[in-house]
Amino acid sequence: MHVLHFGCGWDRTGVVPVVEGAGAEIVGVEVDAAAASRYPAEVCVTDGRRLPFSDGCFDVVASEYVFEHLVDPALAFHEIARVLRPGGTLVVLTPNRWSYKSVVAALTPKWFHDFAARHLRPDARDPQDVYPTFYRANTERDLRHLGAAAGLRLVHLEYMNNGPTWFRKLPVVHGAAHTYHIALRHRSLRRLRCGLLARFVKPQHWYVDSERRPFAYRCTQCTYAPMTVESTCVRCPRCGHVFARDGRTTDTRSPRG
Image 1 (cartoon, rainbow, N blue to C red):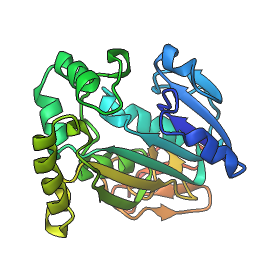
Image 2: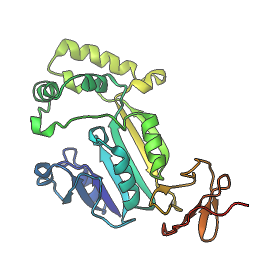
Image 3: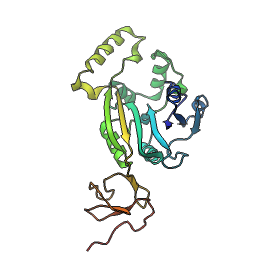
Image 4: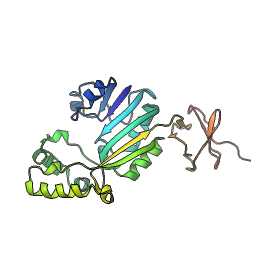
């Protein structure tokens, strides 16, 4: 099994030994060269907008707390979809845009993030390990839309609840935040939890049109679904648009009588 660790940093959470211990091969990609130099496995320094790998070469792509930092997550989704094999899996763990942590982060400047990371977190971080956030892939709707646009099918989405780790050095605040996190365990409040865990699958039949735009079973011209799969192409029964299986077709619209 081949695993791509997307936005790997220096593997703070210990993904590499877990993957290698399971007998799989792992490669990391990271935009920060300093962090990548500390990664304990093979790593490529890239911003993710163009991955230096051939089509369909990974079984799994995993990303943890990365997509909130991307200016254009749609490009990353398309590249990930390209390098995944048909039937492969993308797992994304990212902050929930509507959690109190994300709301505060979105409303405060970068210097405050640096201060909080250094003085409030129990695992104090250097400001160089704190990156700007944009939150453009951090709601259930965002993830569904980005995945579908890249031809990936969302098969599981879960709102994750963690602890008030930022407040352990402030006992009174920590106690109040801990009570709030307990309340978030109730299903009715799940959309306010801190994280989103999403799993996408690349369909076995994954097609691109003549402009290399990927899709699964929905027409990229009129959004109709499902498509009609024929022997050499995929056809939209509503608008007549024709897509080649290999993406080399140039005349993508069939004549309509």
